[in-house]
Length: 413
Image 1 (tube, rainbow, N blue to C red):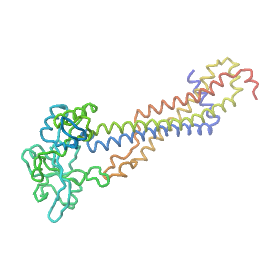
Image 2 (image 1 turned 90 degrees about the vertical axis):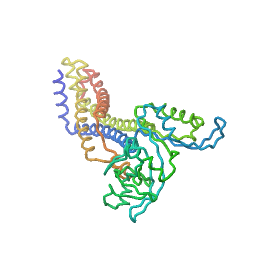
Image 3 (image 1 turned 180 degrees about the horizontal axis):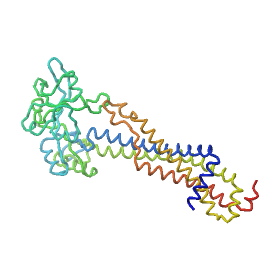
Image 4 (image 1 turned 135 degrees about the vertical axis):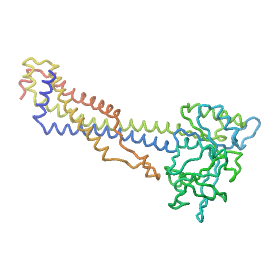
């Protein structure tokens, strides 16, 4: 029976091949639009994730400020200062954090022979490499031995290397930072960098070696890893721990600044989801227009084949037979258009390649541009939308054909 229905559908479609092809083209365009729009949404979300991963998607930065509320007999306006004791407090109170890193920063004069520039010099514990996702292009990064021995070693970022060494090898050479000689042991890989951001013009040295450049008793900041932690509770624990140690109120947001990259990423995730929903709606409307075209074509077909329907009913065809006959024709057109549309969407996604996004604002950011990602889930969603549109578009003319009175149908001219 199903084979007969398909044969009838194929025969009916061949009778007016041009109209059938145009209808298929409309459905193909609609499904391709849905797939490509959803793929763009996926690509946008992946680009945002790549941006955060390049700077450390699980990084949490903690920076001291100045109190704005009275607490424990202290008036507002007291400067908060971190020390090594705070590092131990955080490690004890947040044991699931794999890395807790001290940070000091100083804008210093960095020299190589007659080349001299002012760069940000950062004294850090070696674990910062994992937190900030720092890649090394040449040599190696700082290690615990360098830190424990107060070694005068430096890792320079890519642009700092270009300015200081102008294409010459840097690893193993010496530079002077505020007059102190450091050995270059590594060169960082280029990082994404917006405008005047200095991500690629910094020098990293061991935290303990920072004492030759400035007093390292007080920290400029603390960085930690938040992998596997509840981010809503994490900030509360950080504030509660440091507020007790430094005698300020935990809800005093000017006394302590906490940056959580994962929470920022979650907020962008909400924006990405809203964008995907909007794009899916636009694609569905476009596909719906193709469905209206299919419905009109099928209604015309019902009108043209009214006498045929009357003959079929006179020969014993039941209402559901006529219904399935015309619905199967609509679904065959829908399926064929769907296959063409999916093939078209794959072709467009391949030809489009990389769509400029973050690289328009930042250097070394090609990895964070948008690529049209046609995933199995997108195909499932698009096919489901196509099936619903096809059934609705085909059901209306099919029901009209099934409800025709056989006597009136036979009289139709």
